[in-house]
Length: 458
Image (cartoon, rainbow, N blue to C red; front, side):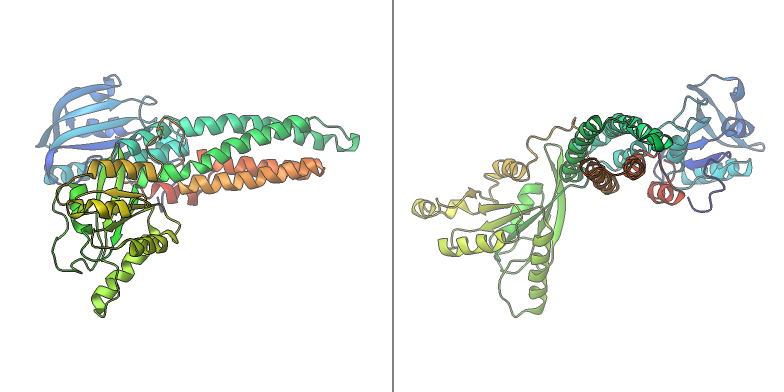
């Protein structure tokens, strides 16, 4: 968004809306007051300026007398479009040559190349979306699981911002009453009932607290769950990764210390993405490369949301307990897994009954589905309702935390009476931070930071 001529631009922008590269179809999008007239200059078919919104028209695109391609042109007349401006989408054959020449032709006729996220920025500026909904558009595009898709859809449809809007409107009412008191300060009157204001603050704090707590789950839905597979060398960590992914992702060998760096891959379990990380075996070693791998394993364990600690039947019980205790000191949810159960004798299993252990055979893929269920349970994702309002954006969490701090100062001002001007100041601060989330309060830098992360054409 840098060097944009105006926060509320009046020019017409153009960009490729489909992924770049050759394909069956490429869609080129224009938005702005001249979108239809610019397209009309190069389109041969019906006069687009006379056509109704939400109609599609077949014709050719011509550069002078040369035919560039046969196309379908879709019209969206303002304000009935994504950006609330005139929007044209030209569906052309997916040749890179055609797409590049068509965009250059449209720019020559008066359009400007769009910047990242500029279509969605215009939707926000023109009132089609609030800021949290606009950010959900980027989340929707990036969603790679059923859960992340559903959460993004819920936010894009205004579930999150709708809840905040109701609270903010009630707080604005009290802010206006406190402001009114300032006009009658010499008469020492109260227009804002302090008891009602206190009740409202507690109500808002309950909602903000719930939303802040939801970030842990919301962030997982959006970005996935990092799970480290740890254990001594040659206990079957790479075999387990392959079994979870159902493909030969990691090299498997009987030679201890084969894995010397981390190997990562993702799968979806009940709509939630898990990022499994196969690590080097944990042991004392003189090999500098293997030692570096062990160091990286310990670092990944500290960063994980869940640790799967793997054992085999040759480990003795005291050593298992010791390893679990050491891993438990990281204060990260832990699943203890006994691999190679085909080698486990009945007496040995009885010795391990005091430990919460899951028994699998990674090689034969036995117990893998049960292990997946335990993983969901351990990270508290087996009962998530994606219809609930979940916060997925760290910017929103920080704004909610600032809101809570301001509201707590309002409560302090009520409990230890302060003058109306101080009370009004803290209420205004709370309103400011709530407004930052939905875009009621914005700055150019904030918008630039948000929309510059979008892809071009969205």
